[in-house]
Length: 65
Image 1 (cartoon, rainbow, N blue to C red):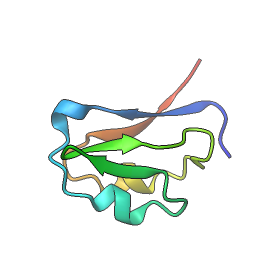
Image 2: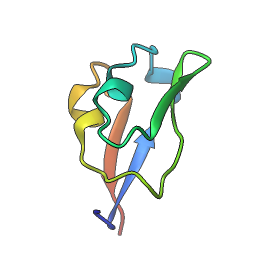
Image 3: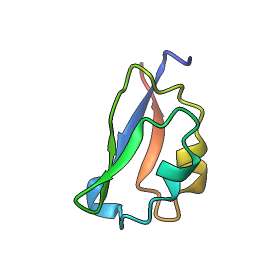
Image 4: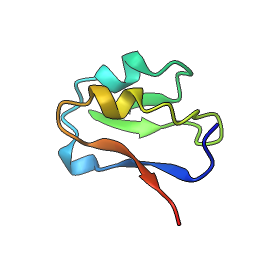
């Protein structure tokens, strides 16, 4: 698990396509009210597949200082 990164979701950019949810290998993302939501931040492996697949750049990994 990568410790110096944090998953960021820009809710207003999310159109609820669900691609990130389908590609998440540990299933910590869900769609709720048409927007992506992180269910369990501790279980997220920060692999970046959600960021890679999001067509709207609404979800990404940010390096923490």
